[in-house]
Image 1 (cartoon, rainbow, N blue to C red):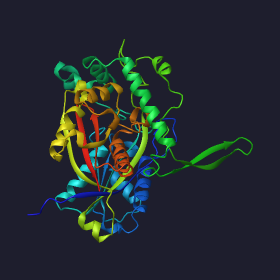
Image 2 (spheres, helix red, strand yellow):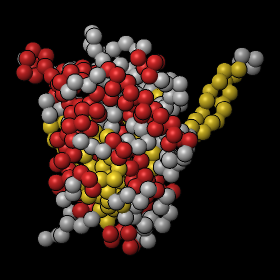
Image 3 (cartoon, rainbow, N blue to C red):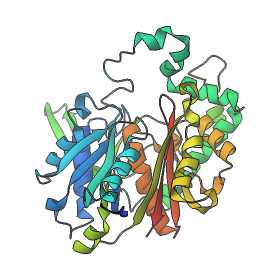
Image 4 (cartoon, helix red, strand yellow):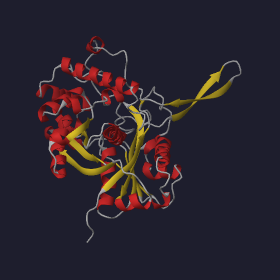
Amino acid sequence: MKQIQDAYIVAAVRTPVGKAIKGALRNFRPDDLLALAIRNLLLRVPSLDPNFIDDVVIGCSLPEAQQGYNIARIALLLAQLPNTAGGITVNRFCSSGLNAIAMAADRIRVGEADVMIAGGVESMSMVPIMGNTPSMSPSILLRDENIGIAYGMGLTAERVAQQWNISRESQDAFALASHQKALLAQSSGEFSDEIFPVEIDNHIFNSKTNLAEISLEFFVSDEGPRQETSLEALAKLRAIFAANGSVTAGNSSQMSDGAAALLVVSEKALKQFNLTPMARFVSFAVKGVAPEIMGIGPKEAIPAALRLAGLKQHDLGWIELNEAFAAQAIAVIQDLALDPSKVNPLGSAIALGHPLGATGAIRSATAIHAMQRHQLRYGMVTMCIGTGMGAAGIFERC
């Protein structure tokens, strides 16, 4: 019987996050973007023989159209990995990228693999948030006990704001702080270790020559943080999900495009390829809550992940709590009495964007690099999940 072994992250990279529809990555196919992430990941580990990569596990919240057809396998082939590497796409909505890391780590921990790539990708520019042909079961729409499943994410945030007494003013203040932290992080170079530049081909029509001209530019930083944001500007925005509501576009996460990839290996692979680990994968937990208050999910998942890790909340030095909405993030922080100084020190989805299935992997890359820079032992990535779930994963700095 094989003994449970440790899984280590030795490299973690991500694209800059682009704004959906009008951003820098709007015309970048997600399979190509993921392939680019995989190639840049392997550049970080030149001593690794790609022929030893067992599998590629990729999170994607809407795996259809341009990001369908098992995008994990397609992207690894586009990245020119050996044909022997497998690929699987997983979907647990907003935690898909984090789930991919947990699944890759589990393969290693039970001795089924030694070298895995995990990550996530999402193009909200190319695939709409409900998919191209959404079709809910009539049992959801016609039965009162199931109607919470059909709630839009914004309406669930309104429910949380009401039940946890989260004011509009506190939501706007939280959103402003996210932008301010993200802007400071960008100016301080906090993301420089994890982000790789994406080369963008711009096709511009020249009216004088009647020809399309191509210009190249490098996309190097997240587009979401807004220098001009203020409490006054946020206060002017109208509630968009409910009459007399408090959830606005300004205190909600941004629709985005992006990708991330992490290399997860066994101790055997560390020695075989002379790799230096950045972090050890410690634990992962998913818990369910009522669908109509899905944003509170991390409240249940965080204690569960801590129990599995044998840790206490105060052991965590860094917490990436995805900001789907300010209302739900505030509610989780308050209910669990999280230390605000440890939560999203560099901002989160309200400022940095939320490319759904990629976010868990992106935020994991951020946490792991931050733990290295600031010499913190334990870090956590956590988020709420559509239809009423929460996920949390814990890493230990090596």
